[in-house]
Length: 317
Image 1 (tube, helix red, strand yellow):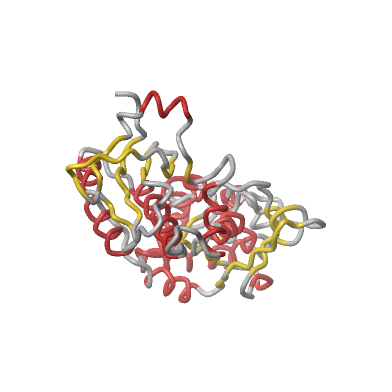
Image 2: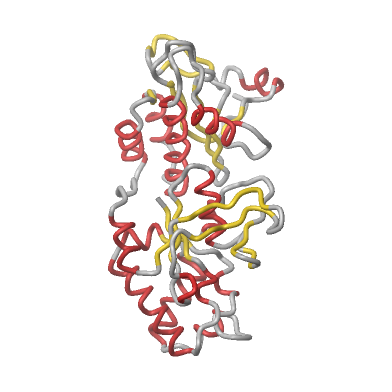
């Protein structure tokens, strides 16, 4: 689960005192809940919105008392977390609330997360006009929308804290990531080669979060697969959403790369380390470039999906 700040809810504030109170309460909630601080995302553009008429939010924050100003500037300018760093790709990338574009803001990312089957939610503080749930996010042009995405929304900080505190703790190292993954995704067989590969790498929390998202989708696909390896309706939708298109999460290697990297993409079989398994299909992580290689397509009658490699993008050896 991720909670995204609805930046539009901070626009049109009555005056600096009201804005300061709203932001002070938000920062207090983040300090009291480590999970909320970890799971509440904003855009790097948040500081540019006009909370007060004709004035950038960062300019307004600069006029607040020193202690409040320092914490807010650190959050908006340095610490985040920022949705831009883990932005979800989408075809026809245009999202609106009413006539207001939110493509690169919290509502746009929350909608993309929901479309991908992830648990994206919104926190709308400030304006009472956003005190309803779900919020309807338009994907595409308002006159010809591709889809209207309902996103769970809260305007109460206590409720947002409860959302965040109910989430699983975030892994703090690769060993924890693999332990959580094996317990959470029982339809995947994650081979010990993954442990050995990751043990030699620097731990990146953003990569860890992305790995969990990729594995969740794979596990859901296997959940919706029949005995003959055909997919039910939800399974077909997951494959269409994540395996198809220029911005697909999962892709096959090109014919050229299969020739160049065939040996490097041959791994110990997770079910039998005495055997090898060639896995060209992979899930992609952009920054830094990591990959999740797995057996695909699944053979008829198979009950699990083998994940043979989690680690840095493979180059020719």
